[in-house]
Length: 150
Image 1 (tube, rainbow, N blue to C red):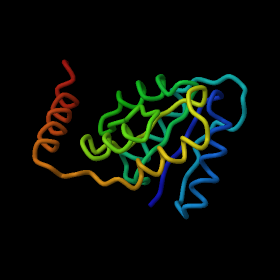
Image 2: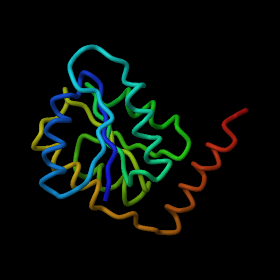
Image 3: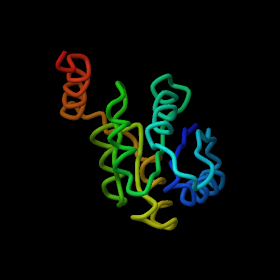
């Protein structure tokens, strides 16, 4: 398993903790930044993480900003990305089981490292259910991406 990770200045500390968790789990990761608390735009870090997932260079992406909201909005604008904005374990499991989410977003100002570890493990280790109703719904999302109201 390989995970693309990225954050803005509001998520640097939690991303540092995330890297330790992934290393403990023997999960390979690619860090797309940012690397300090100087103010940056979250968009610039969400995009390369999501591109790595879409291009299948990574199995999942994890994005961190102050709240997770900005990162999740950007991620969900990218064709092929289904990003779950999760601050609890149940939501992380359900977004994988039901939505086959491939990116997880959360906020450093919302959760701590202990809860983050539980959320990340739930996300990366929960398989998609593959149930017909969930496949049908995901296919409708893909249709929306294709049509995009152009």
